[in-house]
Amino acid sequence: MNWIILIIAGLCEVAFASCLGKAKDTTGTEMYLWYGGFLVTMTLSMVLLLKAAQTLPIGTAYAVWTGIGAVGTVLVGILVFKDPANFWRLFFLSTLIVSIVGIKFVSE
Image (tube, rainbow, N blue to C red; front, side, top):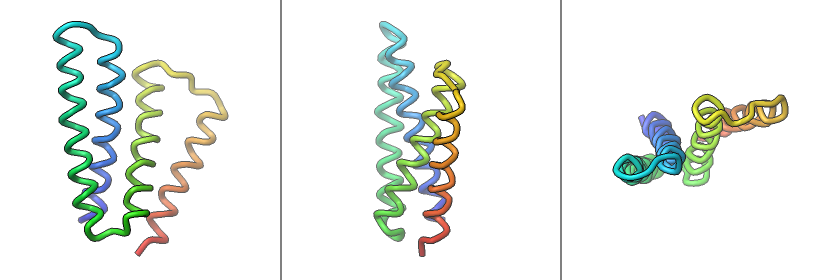
């Protein structure tokens, strides 16, 4: 169950990074709504990470959490914010994914 909580925490990290990106592109009330979304998802992400780290090793939990956040944010950047998707960027993204999965499998 704590692995599921950790995955949700990582997805919340993607959400708060995405909210920052959207807030940068907007003005007025819409910008403040995106910043509000940032605060909510960041808080939820941290609380869920804290919960998962109570039973998972902190090094593993933090590495997986940041890895999910990094991979998800890069993918959102490519799909939503039109960041470049060249061969090397996708190659290193895939090595990061393999590393995250590897850390999960070698952890207790």
